[in-house]
Image 1 (cartoon, rainbow, N blue to C red):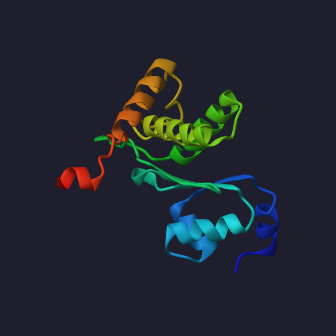
Image 2: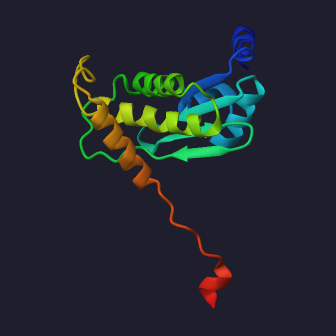
Length: 159
């Protein structure tokens, strides 16, 4: 069972970022969607579950958002990727000045963008030469990666 001190802390948290293994353990539930509901019942209105190379899930009152991970051929060192994700998310939310649906979704993408740069290099100086231009370009690539074309109703497809 979850220790009382953790439950007390979570009852005061607005936005909680956790990885998939931690979410399953905290909720004692293998299914991430059910685990997210159980964790949000503990207090956080917004929950982000990081899934490493499989992206991230954002859970709010009204929606679930699934963001892909950026596909990389070369992953050198995952150390710090989770912290980089959280930093990219927080940085975007601060800059946006909002916690609305779109800001949160963009924040998850920017967190994933920053994390994708971190895993490509070794050492603590991974982000020192990162430019806004390279961040923006990768964010645009994320958008294209996840773009869904307009859906046509099945009735029109079968006619």
